[in-house]
Picture 1: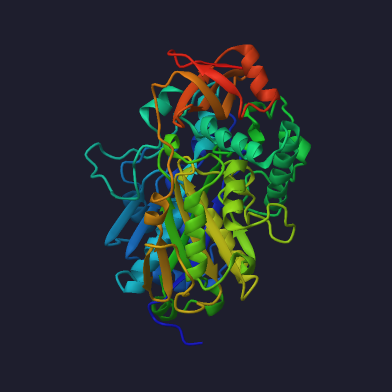
Picture 2 (picture 1 turned 90 degrees about the vertical axis):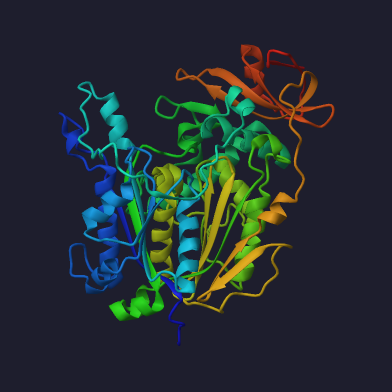
Amino acid sequence: MTIEPSTPVVVGVGQVTNLPGTEGNGALTDRPEPLQLLVAAVQAAVEDCDGAAPGGTAPAGRALLARTGSLRIANPLSWSYLDPGALAAEALGIEPPEILVTTTGGNSPQALVNATALAIGRGDLDVAVIAGADCHYTQAAARRHADRPVLPWTVQPADTAPPALFGSDRHGTTEAEDDRGLDLPIHVFPLFENALRAAAGRTPEEHEAYLGALWSRLSAVAATNPYAWLREARTAEELTTPTETNRMVAHPYTKLLTANLQVDQGAAVIVCSAAAADAAGVPRDRWVFPRAGADAEDHWFLSHRADFHSSPAIRLAGRSALALAGTSVDEVAHVDLYSCFPSAVTIAADELGLPTDDPARPLTVTGGLTFAGGPGNNYGTHALATLVDTLRRDPGSLGLLTGLGWYLSKHSIGVYGTDPGRTGGDGPVPTDTKVERAGGFAWADPQVAVGALPQCPPDADATGEVTVETYSVVFDREGAPAWAVVACCTLEGRRSWARVTDPDQLGLLVTEDGCGRLGTLRPTGEVDLA
């Protein structure tokens, strides 16, 4: 097969998981920091270009690393490096002309791949390394340790120049949303989950069973993943039943239904042009092609969303990426949906037309952020590394990844295959969608179409009669409901936010369906439910 020289290809992937086991007697200080895991992941990706064993010779991978034109880092969240890219380049012994560091968002790795593939296709870039790592497990273990050891992690001089940033650093919530407690993902994603339950017409008990079954299927995949943090298949009952080790965090989520940030993991991918891969001598059976991608944002603030059980951005970005790849979701064999919480998976599956219970096509290749691990901004790099290995073992197949940032806000989608396919499909994309094609890769930005969709007008100062749209009940560490944030619809059809602190009303919200219930919103911001 003749392949255009500027065609972007993923040729090397690497993952590192540093499991617990050395944290006693001050040995936490001997565990690698994020920078070291990141470098180890890149070194593994270098070896993977040749199919070499760990520590083996890798002439093709070393040749590509030496030619790195751009080092692109998913910013670590467990340690505040002033410029992690500069440190990584020095440790790797390379001097790339460009170093980028992402803003916060789980969409970042796939968005980086989309941008990288376009740059390579245009001829602006020849070889790029995308990498990241986080060590929240070691950081948290040090805080809990009786001796409170000081971790000897790298601190750069205060006058270190800031890196070039990739991505939007826009704050995820309004002041009114922050004031009501929508300041953390665990406080926000239950809003989506309870709205999904109401839209599906499930009772709380039925929805609990649904969540358990969905997450149990992810845990079964993690049990087969050698890089997963938790490698044990769990039953639905284990996941949804509150225990001392699986406390209720925010209704309806127990701890084992949430992303697991306390992991020490790193991952990297090497993307280059077909010409560079050939020149370095990368065997063709290592090549995986980014076929198409898309990036879009939902109406940014929660106050403006038309509802809490859908994502127009995922729907339109997914439709665009599949159309440009010249395929359909039914032809995609391998899928990884960003899985910080069950609601994120369900909404993405619904919008993309994927069943959530297909035993032949799980919705993850890794096991997801609960079981495989949720290393800050970098889960998507692990997902891509795993997908590349999966596709290599299944020549001729297609894979699809999604990435998600903030509160179902930023979305990135990629379609991959073991052959380049057509030079960009010609399927229909939404009206006014921006499309770029380069080197056989195609990318879509349907933001105009998303932005034209209906929005809900906010009213931060509303009082009086309201209807509950959805809600999130936060539990204390003793397992009791502590407070709730409620999305309210006024008589004029505007959205306001309220709090519930009354124990009886909190009990009602966790045992019955609060969606659709009437209430009275007080000037204090509390809502009295009928």
